[in-house]
Length: 216
Image (cartoon, rainbow, N blue to C red; front, side, top):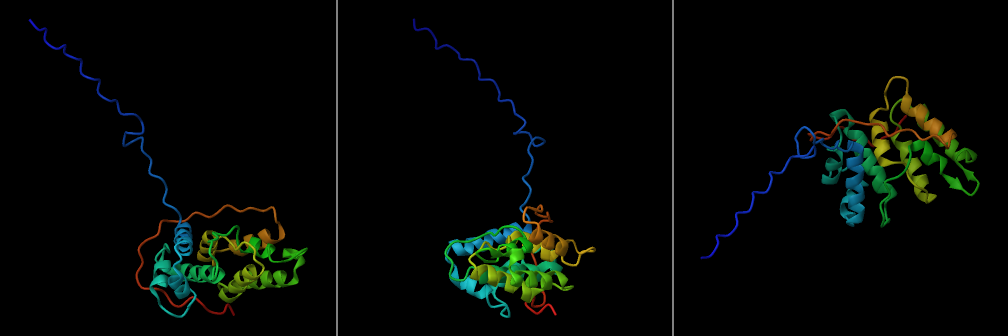
């Protein structure tokens, strides 16, 4: 007589750990709108999307690339800032094969401008440009373009595009904290401000008025 096959015990039921419990799971915070814009722009350079980058360098034309950049903005009022940062990014990266997310704010970028020992505070042109930028009540679009063009010509690291979008979105804040922080970054090289946080981006509607203009 053949003995019946032994009955194996049922494996124990899996016990859900903290990571499996809906209570234990914590959603990662969504990247800031400025970071999302920077990632998209850097992706255009990596993918050699020269047509879209060229479109971004045409500030007057309402192109698909410009509208995509504006849609990263967290509000209708901040769309011009995101459009203009995309314009500045494309200007800096014209002819470049590797994207640069940038580092620091505009004050830090101005502190890197110059040649040899004549950089930052030791460069009269950089000092004059900083004075014009921080003195402007309206967003100094044209002066910001000069900053980026100088960084490009000096082959130095541009400002952080993520920080720049957040700074321009808060340009008119009471007490002018953005302008103060830029001046402090320029005159205090060891100063490293925290990147501001912001709200998640909504999907936008039609673009705001053309942001590219003089600050006068």
